[in-house]
Image 1 (cartoon, rainbow, N blue to C red):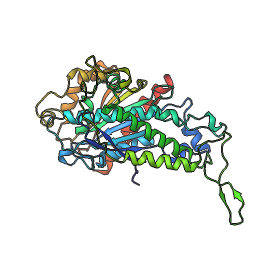
Image 2: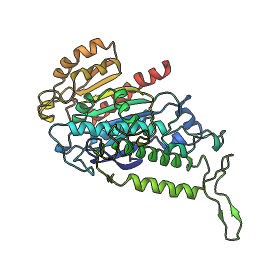
Image 3: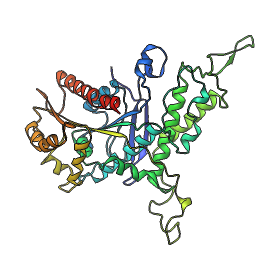
Image 4: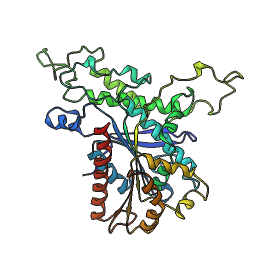
Length: 400
């Protein structure tokens, strides 16, 4: 059965405001419901777990609808992750055109990572049946950009084929998140944070509208007697569910429209004094806690295809590969891959594997090529991802 996205929306790219079509796949219904199944699924203390999967090159038909991307999404969701995917420029509903240097595409990826982390930091865990609504994180502070304080999230940055190449050249996560911490009100980064906050508010409304919380409107019967459709939590709500519906619809209408800039991107110094922006020109500084980051590279492209995809230009410093030494990393590759042979990948990654003290691993899948179309190859792909998450992310959680 095909997994359907929970939310579909647009964000602008920090590169040039190009509208990028995005998706969020939330946790299954059982996670938010009551009963033994939900109790066994929830963690105490609750830690958000998110993953991003980047797709193959859009100039050759790649998009977030790629079957291998969707198989990876399924495997990660089965391990309790909220998963985000996005279309690079020129793919699907995203605007713009694919480039031959990949610099714009790398900034597209950075844009979604920033969005996704601010979204995760604002989504609070479901309340238990024994709690009142007043114990729940209120909706209003979400829009103000003040995230909850709790343990850092687990974040998996993943990519398939060209998407794996982009993942390789991503900046380290603390550097990437620092770009979104203190930003001008008119910046693209500020718009991305606003959209993350709005989608977090929508997610809260969806959580609280589930049967466990009974937050449904009362209505009158034909005899004029008022009857409750559900039992409300103990806290008294100022907003009615009807108000929430209006709020949710308003947020989603905003998110489902591409961003249209009302003033020039490079308005400074025209809009400021000669000394630079004033304090009032910035939105509230918000630092998202640095997540425990993991990397998943599926069918990574190496030379000469890597140079072909980047216009034979340097996409990033090869020192960025050192992040695989200190963060759990799996390079999953078909042993019959003809675009980048498994032998070449193993040779390239040999020093990383040796120096990482077990954090970086190369996993070969027998009888699989680059495109993961065979049924057995798909099963191996999903099993390998699930097992890797189990022995890395879950073990780190228990030891932390």
